[in-house]
Length: 276
Image 1 (cartoon, rainbow, N blue to C red):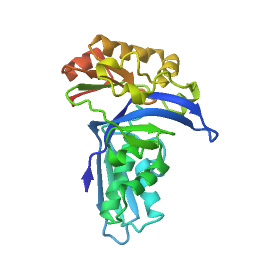
Image 2 (cartoon, rainbow, N blue to C red):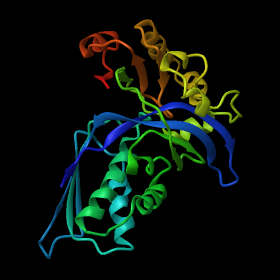
Image 3 (cartoon, rainbow, N blue to C red):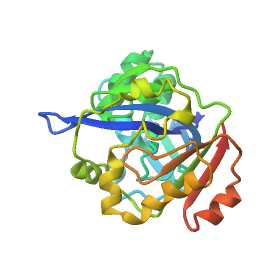
Image 4 (cartoon, helix red, strand yellow):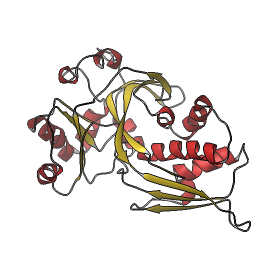
């Protein structure tokens, strides 16, 4: 079985408060993006084979395979359900350390695939519960539709939001920003305007109203990347922002944006563009 885990962007992100458990309450809107990894899971009929094998291509994973979210997805299901022996191959296209949710998407899609392969019959709600145990934004990728997220990003509700007809641009510099680093620098506060209210406005009205609370602290720590957002606006974006905890940025354009132009404007950076 082969599937194509996709990225996400955060349309605004407010870090509202710090919780007693050390995590943070936030508010954001997750929006799926058609930039995709490739995930293949096949059943291994060799009785002498290990429970699973895992291979990742086109990227280097720091740490052991046991730390990869796809492997953790297998193990979290195997702890409570009978799974066949499988060979897992992941081909990465979504940049890592970018705030685009690639690892979370891979894990969520692995849960859905294993549910199908092993005929477990788990509902989307049950899969979301497993996904939430793997990471705050993993649960979003089970239904994979625009969602308003609160709590630590795990309390999801559908939201009416469409960027159809716009061109979405992604730019990622060669800087890795860990989620832990980003949260350690941010100062939680209640927003003046709720994202849930802003998102109902046309995208052309988001600038100046919607924000990403991580930008201020991340720009202070990595001042060179602030110019990416400024350049997206100078190119004609109706709205531009860092996604999640960074370091990727997105721009929403009403016109087409050629990838060759992007690569000229952002030399040496990952660039992607698609009319939605």
